[in-house]
Length: 156
View 1: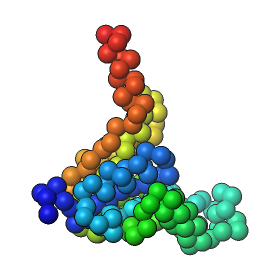
View 2: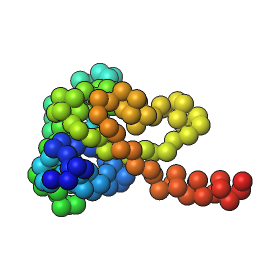
View 3: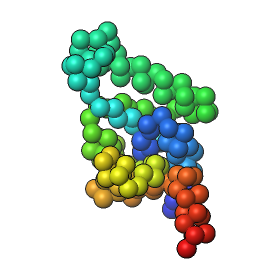
View 4: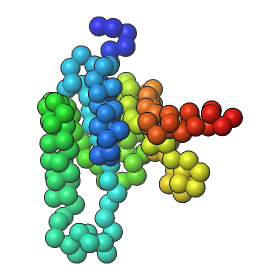
């Protein structure tokens, strides 16, 4: 086994193409794809939201439907034996707690590249995970970030 090989790699997925591509990167760090743990974090429904406690779908049904959709998405990409967990709560906290729970040696996640007001208002999940995770975090740059960087260099 190479010194880069890991026994457990966590990949947070938010259904963006970048987060799905992070699974490909994580695959490079493990011998078997069953060592990749996928986590999707969704915020809990407010009882006044459509689909909340007054709606038709319970949170348990919601978790099951998210898990089914995620498993189908990953199977379409050729990943069949990944560990998949769905959590409700704050994304950064849930990712960090899950990584500790499964004793992850690495977290691989994309950065969506929000800057300015969007970054200030929304915060950065990747940034919070990097600051507080117990293990190394590999943050993948978004393609748009690279293009924007090239534009900045051209105008300097």
